[in-house]
Image 1: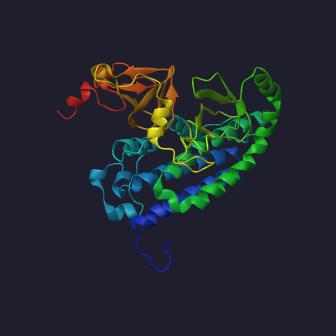
Image 2: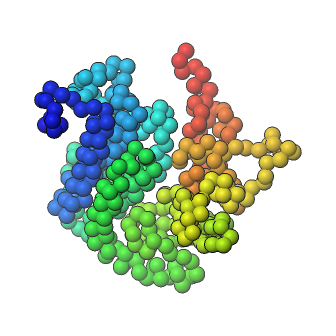
Image 3: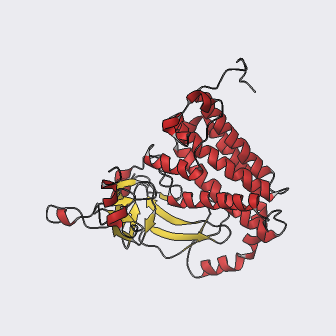
Length: 363
């Protein structure tokens, strides 16, 4: 159908196509949630399509040709008529990172890939979860979608290109609440385990994914406590900061999925990267004497260049708050990376370099 007021031969502008892609993504997402009870199969398929469309819309906001399978052979008129072959979801994520400088955190990539694989299994094969006619099957798919929505929401809220769709993001969040009914039985079944965790003197916090008070926090490493939800698939770190405003001093709780808040929720004092670095960095200060022994640490989750610091026995990114007890040094660029580097990093490099192989790639 032609846009209102345009002739049948007209094509959408880039801005109109971006808006159309995003609106279509929200439609598929809303459909996925609403039809879950009737067909888990179509709900999964539509949820995966929505994720793919959101990522493609973000890539297209950089330039329309990036959506083409072969940009160098692009035909703009053909693309805007919908006649061009476009990129796969994996290619979309890779081009966002390498060309647009937009990092999709690894845990989000893993979630999106998992949902896509589940979609493919349901489309091409007989799938035991097709109707989700058991509480266990329903809970598994719902948990997957809760995790997928958390990862997607964090991205959409961080991308200014989607600012005009704040209401749609909020409405999907409200829709997702209907999924809680499928997880309620699992939450109740975990009551004894949660109570034992509390009796042992440990903490439980609300899960940012499923919304239940079901994230068990393990022993803290300074200000950072690893946690996992007993209801859904959520795993992340819980961080407790103290407001930098001495007149406030309120505790500010955040997690590694959603990252640090922009301000204190109590007094609205700004929470910036300098404050996070000063608060979280417990390693040795860089001085004239140790300058050449100092290792800069990068974060592969958010592509945070030299944003890593040591916090007690962990390494944490002050940009996204992802943390790990592992930090390894790339043998090619000699910079550290939270979570480790690939094997043979001298040849293949790390998230921030191409290794020695990159020198000969174009030869």
